[in-house]
Amino acid sequence: MSSAITTHEETKLLNAVLFEKLASGDRMMEKEAIDAVNDFTRIKMREDGFFRHIMPPIPITNDELDRQVNTDKPVKVVDKEPDSPAAISIPFGTLPMNVYILGPRYLVMLDRIATSRFTKDVDELRTYVMDIRQILSDNAIKDMLAEEDRKFIRAVDTALVGPGVVLPTSGSAQYQQIAGGITRDTLWDSLKVMPDTPFSLEAHTALTNHITIKEIGKFDRPEQGGNLAEDIMKDGISLETYLGIRWITTIKKNLVPTNHVYQFADPKFIGKHYQLEDTTMYIRREAYMLEFFAYETCGGTIGHTGGLAHIHFV
Amino acid sequence: MPVPRQMTEHRLEAPKGWPSPNAVDYAAPMSPAVLAAITGGVVYAGRCVHVNNNGQYELGVTGYQMPLFLFNNSDDPDVENPGGDPATRPQVWVPIAPTGNMMALPSAGAYELATTEFDTTRTYNPNSSLYAPTGTTLATSGVLTNVAGTAGTYPAETIVGVVSRGRTPASARNSHGEHELFFWPVYLPGHTH
Image (cartoon, rainbow over all chains, first blue to last red):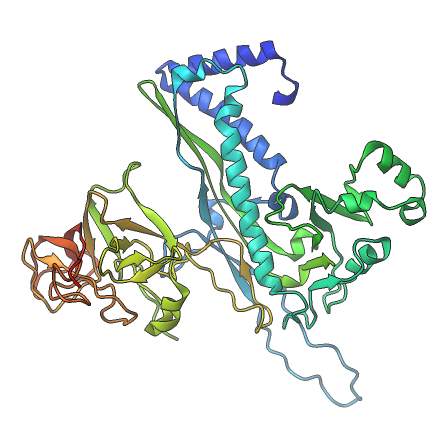
């Protein structure tokens, strides 16, 4: 049952049941209450946060982890598809040159993201009419997703180095500044950056902020084409697909600055994002004090920087 | 190929008082300047550090700096996952995690610790004062000793710990075959220099 469609009466009933279980002192009932909060938290975690939309998490089990000599920390080694030299035309009577195959690999390290440890007097919780699950999990979710997204953008920025910098991996600059602001032409020009590398990958997803996306709303009928300009003028921008790619709009302007657009290839061309332990809410009641925090164990690596692009419209 | 380092070679142990949900543990990254300057480019678990004005660890303690004891090596996979420099190398990988933070236990906490990072040539009696010289010298910086710190002995230099169980160079090693010094972390800042 989604919190968005529950009525006030349903919320009160839900709270009463949850509170009764938390206050019961019965381990089984407490576990049921914690499970209810966990289900709610996990659904919300899947709905929000752009990192999870760009590189969806892949569940990983203990059996799939790779052991290392120098550590007992969870690690996964991933094979990359090896590049091969180009085929060449040769005359009759000769053989091709030898190539001994070596496949590159990369390491995905899993670490833990945890929220602050929140505390609350259970009697104060009685005064809330909003969903208790929401009170417990809202801040936690916001904090954890912010950390996931921050780490992801930091890695992308590291991979693309800086505007105009030619990367040794692709031989081209994948972070480009495009002059002329956001227009029909410059938007299409931005979609040339990623394919214009030896890997010829196409952008699959674009990430921008909620200020930048409004520039698209300014396109008039000739620039927008068809009735879309009218629809946007009437209804605002609710585009999920534009220019043939998926758009994600974020309010995190500190991570995705205005007039910047990040582009990503299909997730399978970027790298891996593993989830060893799904978001879990730890809840403990000691007398009348409730303490809770959320944590998850996950990790990701950008294995192929050719699947990234960053455009700054200036 | 260098011999792989065993995870038991350099470590901090907390025989008493940790882990605890109420422990005042701390997390921060190691100063890149320290990693660039120290031989081998690695700072080992068990070393004594302080936090600089940039919120990064530096080796050793002097003056009013709060001593902290590293729980991680700076090259542990949950601290770093170096895949190469994208600006200079092709086919690199770029980790999304981890972020470089290392856990450390400060002297502000109540626990007994044991470290492999101390001057093993010295004899340590119970109640001996411990110092941790500053700098980026692999052999001595952040390594506990009962001789003196960078600025001498207390009250000129900070005492970072007090030996809890005496040992000599001939004392038995721990179950992993490593020398280990047991101590209570304390904070007695040096203040006369």
